[in-house]
Length: 401
Image 1 (cartoon, rainbow, N blue to C red):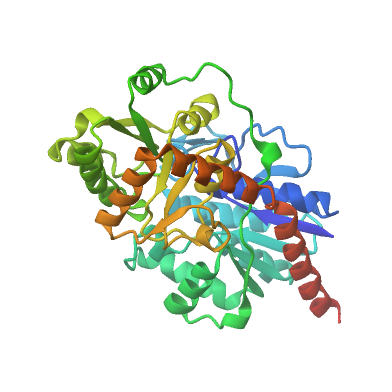
Image 2: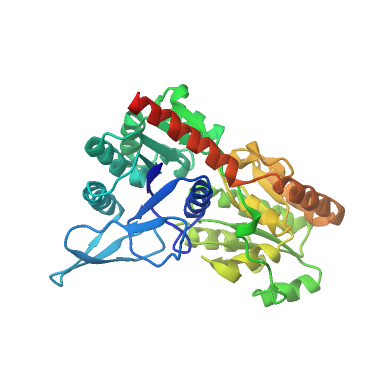
């Protein structure tokens, strides 16, 4: 079985969990004898051996340079020497056309596309090749807009694509219900396949943490409460900072570490100042590699207060590094993660209460960490890959029948 996989990012050139989930799912599928070719919108070195990785370059373009991490504007350098900047919507259109042209010379049985950025390309491939299309939904526009309608163009792409797809994969039951609510897609067309985690992907922590200042503060009795993710309205960080104000009133020796970048950066920095907690809040910007790992290992508690989180891998990642979590009930990961503290994203008082309880009780923190570690042992991407392969077979049988 050969699958044409369409995605917008892969590690190490990723901005968040989407690229990580794609990588780990594809690795698990390859172990189950699925032949994969993954098409990205950019050229980069990934050093991936278990699948072929190709770049979808528009005709006449020599190089595509990202201005940011993965979702900002792109500079196109053409073979005749001229350059032009294209926003994300133009890039989606270029990607669609390039993938359509590439697909004519590639042999595959099924196309599997991840999130709205690649959905149009998947439908073009279906039009050309007549193959089944699997649309993998890691989030929808209302999630990214923090429960608001969001961008009407993106909503149109999502709705039309899902109506035309053969099958939709949702990363949680929460996401499935969101798709039904927002777009009226029949529930029997949507299969839930949870994301997962494999312990063997993580690099170990070394003895020298990159956050030397925080190490020094911890030696003086401070506790570190961390959030890692994009700084967007979806992630609920305004409520997180208001909760932080309440926590600091109870436990002054608490530092809040916020790791990530995004359009809310200036707003959140200003809010922390306005709340009078600027000295207790550290913004690191986007991190990867050792700094990313050390953000977890320096922490006493991880908090994911998302307004709407289709899944949310970071509490699982935190658990690998021995850090317990407080997670919003509006997160898909809570469907498979039981050894964490859960709270409604809007309940600032309860968020503060749960944070305070954990950082004041070594016994509670250690118990949560130990039980979470046991739970993580039962998780693996192999089961998710098995479910995906079953979907492939089911729809290929329909084509050949």
